[in-house]
Length: 134
Image (tube, rainbow, N blue to C red):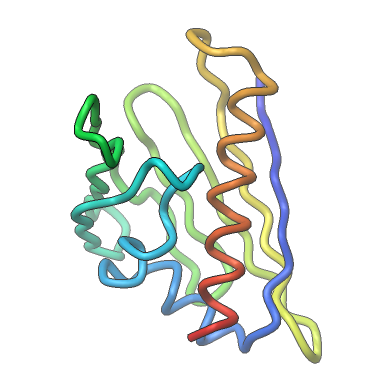
C-alpha cells in the first residue's frame, strides 16, 4: 500500500532542493516529534548513490538508521529511492511563489497506516518550516 503526504514551501525550488538534499540541513529538520532528532546524515545524491540518517530519541532510549539507495534523480524535480524492500518518491512542483512537495512511500506492516502517515507528514512539515527559515 502506498501512502502520500504533501506540504507547501514558500521558497525557490533551488533552495528547497538544496535543503532536502543537504546532510547539514537534514539534521535540522528530520524528526517526527520534538523528542527525536537526527544526529548524522550522509547524502550521495546520484542514481546508485546511498543515503543515511541516524535518528535517535533525545533521551537516548532508542535510535535507528534510515538508509537506502537513490534509484532516480531528476534535479530539481524528483528523487526516488529504495530503503530495504520498500520504495519512496519525492516530487517537487514549482509555482510562482512556492514549491509543492509530495512524498509517496510504500507502507510497512509493523505499524498502523495512520501512524506512518502522521510520522512522515510531521517530518515533511518540519522540513517546510525549516526550509522557509533558511
